[in-house]
Length: 216
Image 1 (tube, helix red, strand yellow):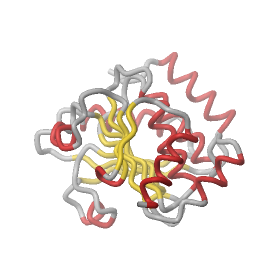
Image 2: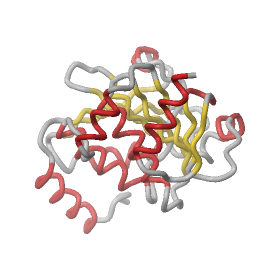
Image 3: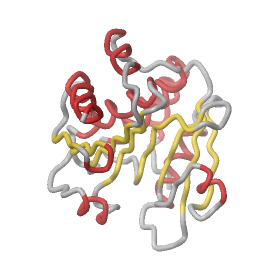
């Protein structure tokens, strides 16, 4: 049985036809080692990739040389790469289901355009960040506010190659959730605990928090 209904597939296909510009390359990493959502995630990505010829999907094992190439150790994880196979910095750790499914679709469209739907003044501020920044946004599929926080992190990664934006499904990765004291979502962890932002806040606020963090 398809993970995405026929009606929904048609809507997404029409959206891709109308809005997508360039190619989008997706790498998915799975494992046979006690992974509850790996198969479902692969099915979702496969169905999406079949909706438009501009989307390519490559599936690998998390123990493969390809995973080591991108320094990936946890599955399921979905990343996007450019035409030269360089990691764009847009990552999904866990299944992109529930409210996060729309995040995945919007990311695909943004990546195809090479420029996210962000005001020009904000793009300039993102580009000014000159330090390596890792944003881990903890979410659950049932959280209606989480996509906004994930999209902020992903859009920043699309603009500045020093920034990595990880969506982390909190229930699928309990050790990470415990490590960073995630008791509610969304929660954005900056540079592995150097700072954090609770809740879905505007892009400008996240940029300010990052600037404060890297300045210290």
